[in-house]
Image (cartoon, rainbow, N blue to C red; front, side):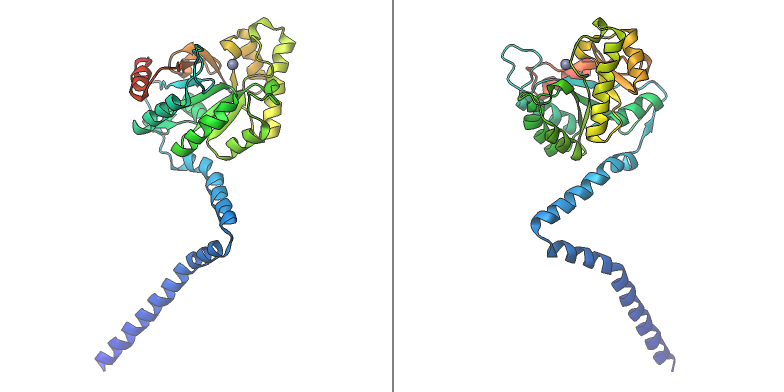
Length: 292
Ligand SMILES: [Zn+2]
């Protein structure tokens, strides 16, 4: 009798396990079916869009923010054109840029979005031990053709400060390319004003329009709240700073050398200019030497 009872009990448990297992695994089986029944192209699209929509939230949710007792200072790298220098110290060859990004990745650096940089600066906490904000000025086409593939391959983020009057020029990337980069979740497009004039030489009304018209264009085209202003040629004065604040920017980046920190002011953030001629290790030495 006792033995029979045990066998019945055992069978009941077994049946229950099978049912529970079936219920738990069913959703996975369904997903797998859906994916295999679709064409390869649409599956790829589905996967990309899932990664894209979650990538921003993911960085915020998954990243463990580290609080700091001392003021956080970090490098904002400044690049322009990714091309052979030919005597122009603002141009960095794509191969060198790739070595720089690889060095950062290999050395455990986390690349910030503007939103993350703002949190670092205002709340004095960081999403990783080593952080860096990669920025490009102007919006050269080679940022899209040469830089974007490298960043995609390494899964690293960067911000490109674009001059809106360059739209339509063959040397600068276009709206579709801009949207494609933004949609990757890796590239943020921010403002380098409308006409790239030395802002400190303009009258108040022109300063306002240079800052506001470009911000409104990005806000509309990219469906975002454009928060970063990059001063053309690094030129600004008190009037420029108040105009930036008044017109909705949260931060502005300069060409003054050094690591960025809140005590310098959110509208006068320093950057580290990257010149041509650095291999990966040389770049690493240079970056550490620029530390405050
Ligand atoms: Zn510029």
